[in-house]
Image (cartoon, rainbow, N blue to C red; front, side, top):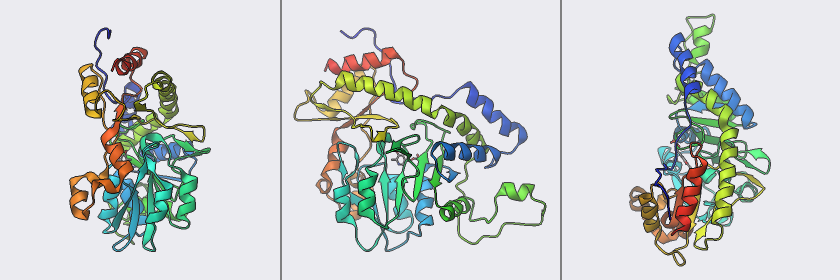
Length: 381
Ligand SMILES: *Cc1c(COP(=O)(O)O)cnc(C)c1O
C-alpha cells in the first residue's frame, strides 16, 4: 500500500544562503559580541510581537532565569509551573533557591489548567510561569483572573508569532521568554529573547544579562569618555547573544509569518485527514488563538488504539517517519521525583500527556508528498 519509503525528520530548520551572507558582516567588521545586529534583531522582534522591550539572551532557559531574578524570586518563595513542560521551566525556579509548585495541565490543550491553578496559590506564591506549549497560548483570561496581582511569566519558548485574542505572545504577562533553539520555528542556533511592556523590568533584564553593568560594551566602546568603566549596581550574568546569532535572527524573524502560515495550512490538512481516527486526539485550535505550530502534537487513546503509543511510534519509525513524545512530565523525571517525593498520579493530566502524546513531523522543509505519506501511514495503522 505504501509506495516508496521516505525519510522524514521530526524537525529541520530553514537556514541557507541569506543567513550565510548575514553572518559575514560581523565576521568582517570584527564586532562579534552583542552589538548592532543584536539590536536590529531585538527591534524587529519587538515590532512583530508588539512589545516595548525585547532583550536578546543566550536561550529561553537563561531568559526564564533572568525573569526570576528580575521579579526578585528567592528562598522561601513559591513559583507555580505546569507539570508538563520542558525541564528548564522548573529548573530556573530552583536556580533562585525558591520552591517549584507544580500544577496539572489539561491534556486537551497541554497547557496549565486554570481551575487547578487556583488551588495552588498561597500567600508565598511570587510568580506563575505559564507555558504556551507547542505554540498554543495558555488560557490567559482565566489564568489572569485567578492570578490577580501575582506576576505571570510567559514561557513562550515555542510561541514566536503565536497570539491570544489578538495580542501576540510575549505581551500577555509581565515578561515573555522565547527560544531560538533549532527545534523552534525560527532559530539562531541557540538563543533567546525576553519581552516586556514594563520599562523598569525591560531595563533591569538588559542590565542583568550583561554582568549587571550600567552601560553596554557598545555604549562604552563608542562613547566619548574612554576612561569610563561601567558601574555594577547588581549581580548579573553573562547571558549576551552574539552578533553572529543576532545577524541570523534578523533574517529568520522576517520569515516567521511565512513559516507559521505554511505550518498552519498543513496542520489543517492533518486535521482534516486524521479527524476520523477515533483513537487519535488532534491539537486543540480555535479562532481565539493564533497557533504558532512549533509542533503538531497528538494524544493517543490507549483504550481505543490498535497499539500502544510506543508501538505506534516504532511502526512509524520503520516507515521512515520520525515522531517524539510531546515533552515530559517534569514531576516524573528522576531529579524531581526523588527531590520532592512526588507520586506520578498526583498530576494525572501531565502523566497522560507524558505517556500518550506523540508529535508528528511538521516543519518548513517538508513537501506535499511528505505530508501525504504521513497521513497514509497513520491511516494504515
Ligand atoms: C525549548 C523550550 C525551552 C528551552 O529553550 P532553550 O532555548 O533551549 O533554553 C523551555 N521551555 C519550553 C516550553 C521549551 O519548549
